[in-house]
Amino acid sequence: TQRVRIGTLLTPASRRRPWKLASETATLDRLSHGRVILPVGLGAIDTGFDSVGEQVDRKIRAQLLDESLEIITRFWSGQPFQFDGTHYHVNWGVDWLYTPVQTPRIPIWAVGAWRKEKSMLRALRYDGVLITKMQGNGSFGEVTPVDVQQVKQYVDQNRVEKTPFDIIIEGVTPIGEPEQAEAVVAPFAQAGATWWIESMWGSSRKDVATRIKQGPPRS
Image 1 (cartoon, rainbow, N blue to C red):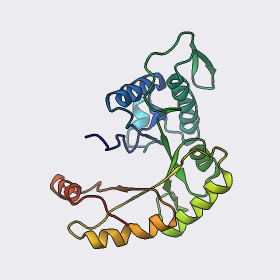
Image 2: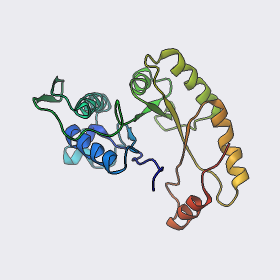
Image 3: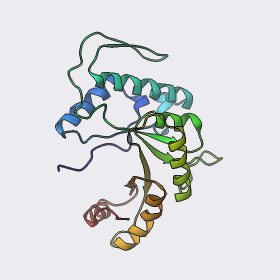
């Protein structure tokens, strides 16, 4: 491929070594001629993580994520740097050769829990927000076009940088019904969403392949 963007959905950077993740993404960006996106979040807490030494405290994982992103972007710059955080300490004294093709950095999309200030402000420091909505019981709620419109207003009012910024939505559109797929996506696009991620998590490989062949919905 020559135009398809490449990335995960998503990378729990709080559970990765930031220098290794920086190297891996920069290498992939070079191999793909500048097509990588790095979506990040805290990551899901699966049963048993605390039994093998993984950090499960949400506050600490958020700290790890913030420090990781700071370190990753500094490595991507190619310049020597020092970093002294709560969890990471880096004293990198030489030029780093594995810089990505894209400048000033590989685009970073961060999960933003709508109306959670710290989560949203993290996303605003980077290049895109993957919107989620938390319910009172801790479960995820459905993101609506109204939510997207409100997030767009929040971004316009609060983001300092004037560089391009994406608003990303996950959802599912019908297989074999392009017009209905367009009808699902159109309200989100009109509200300000810039990317639609087809999230067929529980679907069969056959259905996923069929949906890919159908092509992206147009709005």
